[in-house]
Length: 309
Image 1 (cartoon, rainbow, N blue to C red):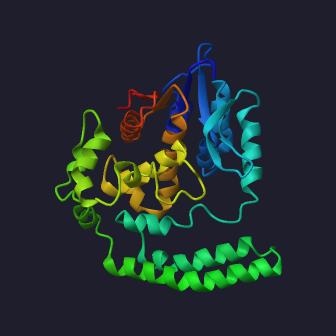
Image 2: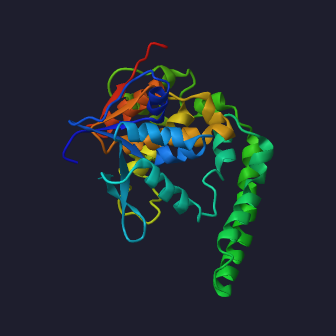
């Protein structure tokens, strides 16, 4: 990217449509969006208006670079050609062939964040097994048989884990207390080096892991990666922040709201490849600033204010 790039949060597109702000096609920098915007747009009732807003400001698509195994390699490229409407069409066609739902584990995530529904949690092992079998139904018989045998072993164990979680309950205040934040100090942290401030509170409870490991930037299980990509690290860090109560919202406790929670995390992660990220969401901007500072990422996190505030 030769010119500076400003990644816009989804709520900025909403402000454009409402006439609250006027962003024009800028000759000195790029307005930037990603396929995560498409994920949010696809959940709306009128995709065309959001795509039109992106086209009106000359926004460019930012995509993660992948290797031949479709693994993230840690860089991203700006696609300067093609209209958002065409990129969106390509996106919808691509996800149309994916049989497993990214929302599958939402009942689990909502539960550990202090919300969700016990019944949905208890159905998770069966739903997982059903989806895995569905996406492998066209495999050769020997491979399908091997997977079936593995599921026969793993499903009962997963059921036991879920049963234990349901039995323990999901009192988030007790969970945070067990992590060393009995007084809720993490929610009020401010100033510089906020992630390190958090670690000073809960680190003594997690002596077996480092700060990098706890916040998801260097997981012990790297799923085949030699070095964990910063994009995945930021997404994982946001999930940890939800759990410990740093700039978290109640929507992370609602199964139906978790796709939006994921989008917020993904926007922060994609913003790390740009010169700045722009949002109306105060919590998102505060998280972005804390993460970018900790990882020494040069992206500026900018809060946009409107007359409505």
